[in-house]
Length: 164
Image (cartoon, rainbow, N blue to C red):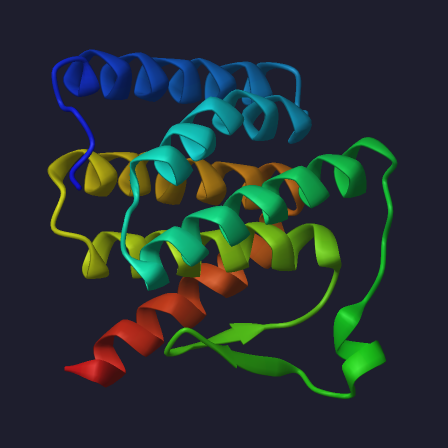
């Protein structure tokens, strides 16, 4: 059954504004933890709004990854998952995701999950929330490591153009 939409436009606008404020404060204070925390209400509402099996699973995993990301960034835990797995990239949700520091892999996975949510849902509000999550995660990756951000952006562009 579809979730009520009476307050959805107002809530989506509010969560978008909160995410934008988080991004701005993150850049002002050069701290990736700020936009992650400010993104949590959006992720929680996204998990509430989704209904299909794959979209519900994606939104819940997305929320769990964000919670794990808070721990990784807050405690400055650096763990190179590429060395652990013995692979430079992993195929996730139809995209090759470069592996490396878990603090970067987390938001990258969230980006992939937000793309899955955006493409597999019919709801305008869940798409709106997925777009907010998508954009905010780019800011998070940039705040953690601008060099890796540039590499991921180039890889993402290559993968998009490879599909066409």
